[in-house]
Image (cartoon, rainbow, N blue to C red; front, side):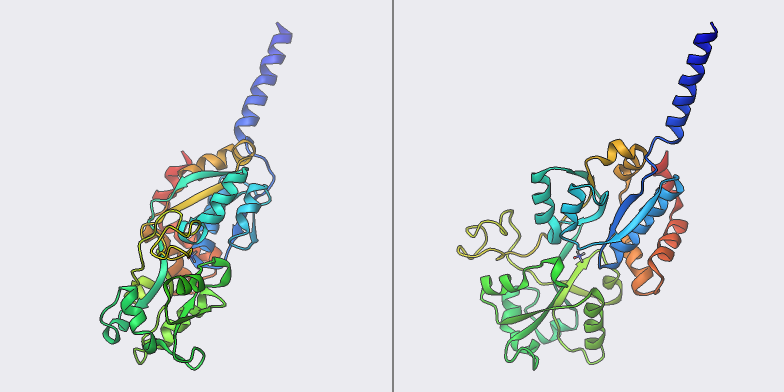
Length: 312
Ligand code: TMO
């Protein structure tokens, strides 16, 4: 009798402690990259985890190499797997194993060559890429001679702009921006006298609310365009397609996360942001100039109904 009471008490203690401390007290390591929505979203989810009593740590990492880091468990998850920029690295890591697909956000994404709408007045055939190419001289700068200038994203986003220019025989020189901020500075500087420009941009982003514009329409993305030269209009070249026009935005995690932090993993499975929510996260930093952790706190306060529902 006494023995069984002790056993029952021990079982109760074990059950209750596992209910309260199911997740490891080791830090959940969240990687931070070099564009605002990802940084704010990482802080949003990190602060939700902290609210649950989790230990969280942030590390700045390369946005391509991170898939190898997740696979090895050096970082725990990735909140913004953009199909256009990171689909190839994500698929490569999935093939090696160790990383799991934790599902899609509600958001639909696009990343590609983009122009502010005033550019179309100078080049009315837009958004066709062939029309853009015929207008190449409009985009010439001292740096690019008689060819047009295309300001691509920072190199780690691996947009393959140079390969695309070669594959499609375009009269453009591709320059990589040093940072996302350099893209916004370029658009801002062109705005005063409505200089035609073409730069890398994406949606969801704060920029669409500030500068109306359009993506250049390249040959439609077909799976394999980055792997098989036969895919796409140029039979001898890779990257002769635009990026997906309705790309996914996924969450990914180290495959050991579910066992080590089951409560946090269950929340991560439910996390899903819309285009408008993601654009707002970027706006709080790029327009309101909040620090990412403040932006995250403000976003959480304004959207409590959204994320509280994920905790039940
Ligand atoms: C990965 N990005 C959203 C910057 O294109």
